[in-house]
Image (cartoon, rainbow over all chains, first blue to last red; front, side, top):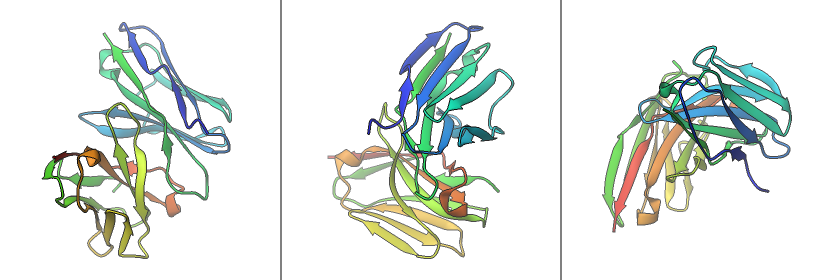
Length: 113
Length: 113
């Protein structure tokens, strides 16, 4: 099992550009979570899916952020347009109903200059 | 209601000492309390978890103590080792872990040799 796979590992982009982060959850997991980690705010849940359906997107900062899960093996988090305050590490995690604990990916470090 | 408050923010312990990290919550619907360990450049990884029907759970050198009436739980690391140096997050969720996890802000632990 390769675990939760995120790409890219690092992304540097200019303010105003579109950024797309990608995640492949563990096969068989039916929950997928997107978190953002910063020194100031810690780990914040942005959105989570169950069986590819968005369940709670109340943590998405604003309309510039969007997330999709077109199938059970792939999800994207898009920021358009990006701003310097979006700079953070973005984590994807997956879990399986009935088992406890999330498995996190290694994260994408996003820097918006 | 959804917050989990974690302390201290940072902790320095000598090798062989005991590391203690505390967390408090308000939402009485929480019924699953995991701890995650994060090394630099990695995603958080599940370390140990407890449910409120027990007051203590031990796995090796790691112990969770749970006080339901006080709505507090803590992580104890016995015989702390330099390899334990990492950031530790407490978390909580409802419905036995099926709901989204709410994380504390994290504690950076440094174990000096």
